[in-house]
Image (cartoon, rainbow, N blue to C red; front, side):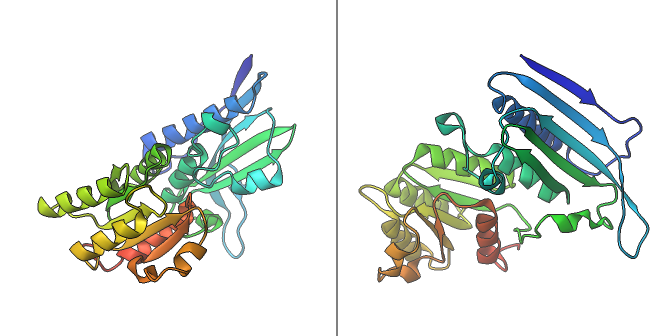
Length: 278
């Protein structure tokens, strides 16, 4: 049995943001809390507006949104990695996207995210919204990542349907338009058709190891059609397979599979800045 408790502060100040994104983040946090308590327990949702002292200036107000559970908790390694996309302790039941999406929302809202957790004690996840995002120092708590300033048209090529779905959902949450292809030849065909109908992709993300038509062949075909289209290659074997290949120049960035969200964001930004409308 799960006991849901509310501790909501009255007269909270307004924060600027997308209500649907904040609502989705809260939903993800509650579902994670439920999963952390297989034998039941207590979930508490709290809001508050503490005054945060700052050096050299007047104290500032922030709106806190906290979700706490009395579940299994996390060890330090899990707590350190839990915001990474595709990282999950739920086995096949989990996609590893819930907390990554919450983290993405926090970054888009200039919001700090804090995690307190101990094995066997439970977890508290705290979102700290600046009342005035233009001047609040809370944004410094979240790493400042370079992100594209417009939506990108992205082609994702992988023969793993789970990874395709996860990447598509993650990138769409970031505001991009994503097409997935379930193999190398399907990716080449999708890229070719997009050029023919004058809706080209801004960037291609392709797996290296695929049957029949692998990532190197995808990269070769993309380069033959448009030499300047950026290509990110994903590999589960680190950088060694491409380091030994004569085809290394065919790709612009090599990322371990599955990619970490901050690495993917940085690669997208660096490889598309200065192209098109960016």
